[in-house]
Length: 138
Image (cartoon, rainbow, N blue to C red; front, side, top):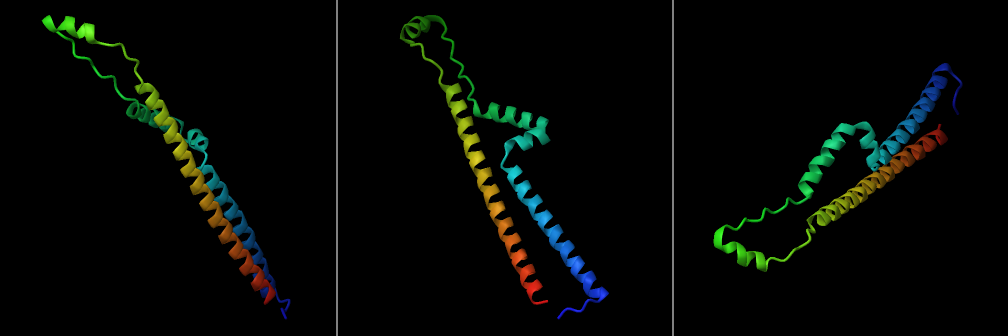
């Protein structure tokens, strides 16, 4: 049996404090992992970096316009009659690529968040089970 000495009570109180702190820390880890999957949290925390990154990414994803060679002299008439007006589709491809990249990035972040949550839950469950087992044998 457990004797009610001052040392025993101090140890029991310390164990209760550790359990409380562990629960609190695990909840913070889980919330932090959820925030990793939310792109809005990055925008709130680092708005200028996100704006710069979006501009750089947009510049890299959107293809540049091809410059047409300007015909000179005698070749201008045949080329002008053969040319067909075309509609540029490159901005549409850039938008679709950006949307696809955002979709894949969001899926990856959700997977990381789910994995971190699962690992945190396992860690918390094992600590809780061990604490309950230790409490039974005291």
